[in-house]
Image (cartoon, rainbow, N blue to C red; front, side, top):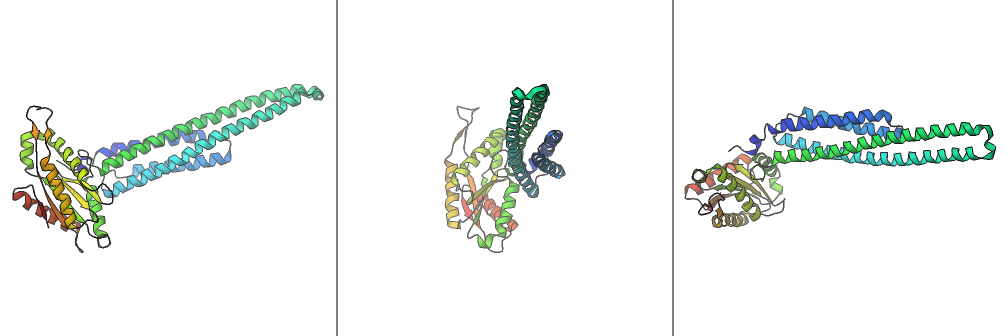
Length: 342
């Protein structure tokens, strides 16, 4: 079964380009509204927001759109930029709403003053002209308020659209970092973090790399089929998540290959790592899963072998993984359902 990095290679292309086009449409709507803004300060703020939207749009379109670690980091940066843009646009909406209220109040006050003057006995012959001016002022007030309301509505819609885009970017980022089937981290994200752990390894204290594989995987698939095999992998992933430390800075679980999982155990010495591995092995060996399509006897039971490798100064990521793979193969060839160290 291909890993998550390969399975998502084609998916984001249409997704991110679609996001870029949505952002372009919102920028176009704000650009149309911009000339109607009378207040110079508000117009300047809107123009800056528009530049930001266009910048994000350009960056999204320029991405290669294949999710290796560097592209995943680009998605993170774009999501953060979009979040800031959403906040800025939200502030603009609030400013426009306030400006709308203030302009309406001021115009209403001026119109009332004109009406009061027109009613004075001393107004004489200018009363009719004042009444005409009042009517024109009322119309102008209505037009300005209508324009401000329209601009505020467009800005509000733009904010809502940006929030939706932010959600889509978050989803796209999640697909880059998570294995679609098991919902644990993908192999590409594991490789990225393992490289980082190696680079800072000398200063981070004892830590271990754990590799776990389902024993006799080919026979399991042959006996139960790929659909049940996929469901089994999902259950195994949940079992491992529950057994490993929950804190994000203590463990990192990922799907390593078709029927294998890997974990980086930070601030964990080999003795503690072996205790965790034994807990995983025992928990899985004791688990029984009932097949829904065979309620009268379709019970699935598997075992798992695990290798625990401690990081040593001078280790490379490739060397660490190779030691773990060799130890795991030896454990499975010896009958499986065991924990070995290397």
